Length: 87
Image (tube, rainbow, N blue to C red; front, top):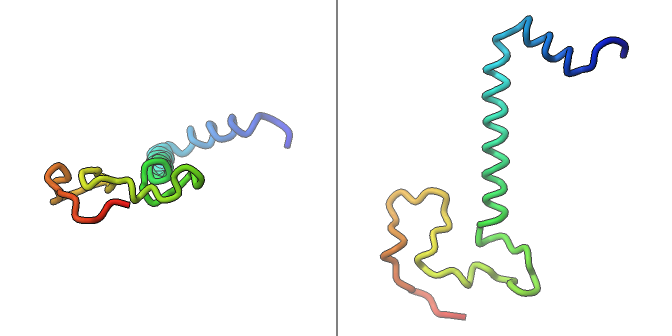
């Protein structure tokens, strides 16, 4: 392909069609938030075990007061008591 680089073509296209700027912005924000949420799930979820040798079952080490849900609407985790045996 001769001529300017693809980035230059993209900026020229955006100058001709300014209505695409908000669309690209919203798509970028949506993709960024989806990636951040997936990273949060992979790093902080008790269902994911990255270290199988030292901690094969991380969900057994959670106390009842640990909040592992992203949004808890009606549950107050500070007042929960242990209702299961320790392993």
